[in-house]
Length: 334
Ligand code: SF4
Ligand code: MG
Image (cartoon, rainbow, N blue to C red):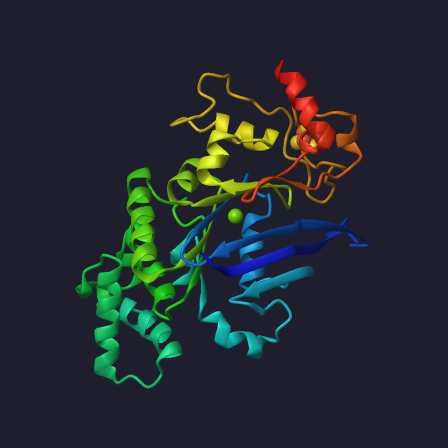
């Protein structure tokens, strides 16, 4: 599989005013040196607790937020430094689907109009009749009756609205979809339908997905590979099977132990993390996870771990897996 999207050392920092007079500023490193790739036709799941920077990562890739540093290549082209007008043609090939499609659908526009508008971006030369046909095809593609075209967003259920959001993303024939918590607002039974629809569309259209979710169960269902994020950094990335068979980062292990179904650690106790997620404006020094990590050693509070290769597709950022670290973990196991 070849690479569709390559993100290298992406950084997105925000400055937030502190204090009444706004005289002192905090820098929130929402995304702090994130690297991964999404290959053609695959799903990379990006999982982590709320506030870990996964949505900011997705929005930075889409240039909805300007990254502070790093590079983003889309189909081999560096896109992070393009001007808005240079980026616009590529923007069609990358689409984002949000958690709440209602917020991104104009309440005064029928589905027909909303989809026509999106189709017009790619195919401005179409006749009115062709546009109507196109909308019908799109609705069918996402499993909606073409009679729905004359309705308004408020007339639909959450699941139907998400189908419309997906149809609108597909209208410009993208090759990459960033799906940011696309099923989190839906009932569990509807979640499965939307996840199945996304998988079906991927097979038919060869789409690559960056699937962002706090729900490891959902991510497990849809992903080929999974990246685990904590406080602005990716702590582990691996093929799904490998990650579930051999979660190496203590944070991944804790997340997995909390997934009720098909839990690889089911014979073991659930790992309950103590302490809150630290303030992202003041992340702990060294390994950002050290304040909650059950395995922390002295160097963890001082030295930031770098990604260590476990195999060609499996990387973990944790001192336990450095050269010396392998010994540490083996000793702990004995
Ligand atoms: Fe825990 Fe240290 Fe590994 Fe961080 S580097 S996850 S604190 S053992
Ligand atoms: Mg989010």
